[in-house]
Amino acid sequence: MSLVTPMVIFQGDLATAIHELAKCKHGVALTGAGLSLASGIPTFRGKGGLWEKYDPLVYAHIQCFLHEPEKLWQMQKELLDVILPAKPNKAHEALVTMERMKRLACIITQNVDGLHTVAGSLNVLEFHGNKRRLVCLNCSNRYPSERYLEQCPPRCECGAILKPDVVLFGEQIPIDVLMRSRSEASQADLLLVAGTSAVVSPASDIPILAKNSGCFIIEINPEITPLTGYVSDLFLQGPTEEILPMLVEGLQSKTNSDRTP
Image 1 (cartoon, rainbow, N blue to C red):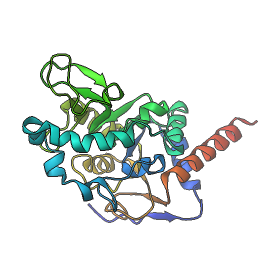
Image 2: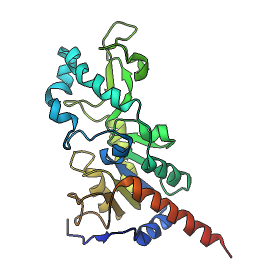
Image 3: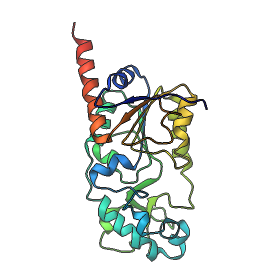
Image 4: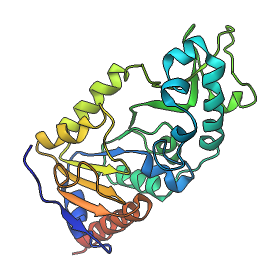
């Protein structure tokens, strides 16, 4: 893919992003762990992340669940204690508003915290599942995670140990979620990439698929990523919980001014 020179925006100069959002017909957001930092949920891979304490290929692998579920739940319980009390932040709320303003048709998220749905977003594709749910691999029953906070490991009514309803290492992305995500990306005329470095496949393929379909891509991250300068058309540098509300404010102002005779 040829190099695209990004328009690096500092100090709140969001006019181009607001203009592109205002005219888009099928906007899609791709979100990652950076979006939930302000909700108190640390990234897995960053400094102080859970992967520094637990080897994911041991504690978050499907084989660990199948053969040593108690070991897997040692880490999962710690993670649920962080995720379940967490509340959506201003970035999640801004995306809800964009959806209500018909600027976003869909959110594709790599996060497993469920905060987009808690915030009120309606069309959310959870690429890696949702830790707020538990699933039984024996009978397919599903349960809310908070019901089982005192059980470690939690058990289904059928007696089997429950699994977090997420994609563990060694598992495939659900085919329906994968196909719907690719369909949304190929239809998008604007893609918001927010809070993700886009390095984990196959979610990392979404921006490239959108770009190859002629989509305008706005990236929002505190630092440059592998997308910056190659895939992103516009790079807004800063925390998502600050920049996304600014985009909403600009959209609302533009909408109101356009309606004024």
